[in-house]
Length: 335
Image (tube, rainbow, N blue to C red; front, side, top):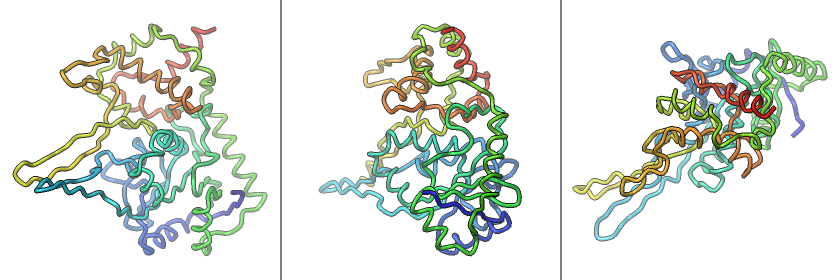
């Protein structure tokens, strides 16, 4: 899609109010107590254009989800949720968007995820200021090239609006009173903003690292020795998708549910199997799996690194494990 528009910032809350009036559930960053989090908003004035510690992943891939329920009586009756509300996720960041694309490498055959995605409009926001610990420069950069329905880029009093899909174009057409055509001057302003933030981002050389990681690299052991295996890095990561599935059944009522919930490859119980055996019982083995998945396995299968360079894992890590340190170490060792 090559269409481009501009929306004045003061019109954005009005657009959100119109979406809510038309029965869209709108998810965006909002102030909650002393933090800014992604959540459903009730009116446009709640929207905040801000980067969040935890992205909007859970609104496409919930932290806890009932896959189906069942009743065991004379026969087993199974019920699967089929109604998915239409929603607009307003305020994605490019690292979150690329995380969503990495999820879809795996979940493209998952009916629960894909049905929810079909009912969702993704409005991405380019980053015009660098995150404190972000390193997305060589992992896609602060502005996405695809995967969004609309993409907003702050150019001062307005947002430049790129159209990325037919759904995005349909939204603009339906609410055209809030948009006007972009000019060459707007295009230049957008590019200047993006060039400026690219210059400020750290240059962490990622390309080719999948060929350079060593199985017994001492930094893996160092990270494992420091790690307390809390799983925080996995839970804030926009691309991590590991989950556990559990049946909760009440013998008295004969009613049960199968629940899917997020899990972490760093937790000791993650690879424990029937009989109590654990194929990755050592901390080092679990840390190696995480690093290889981010920077080798996913690339070799799908052609893209699983890490999006958001830096959130470092933000939440209580012992300061830094993937930038890992990348730079591997590159120095290679040289």
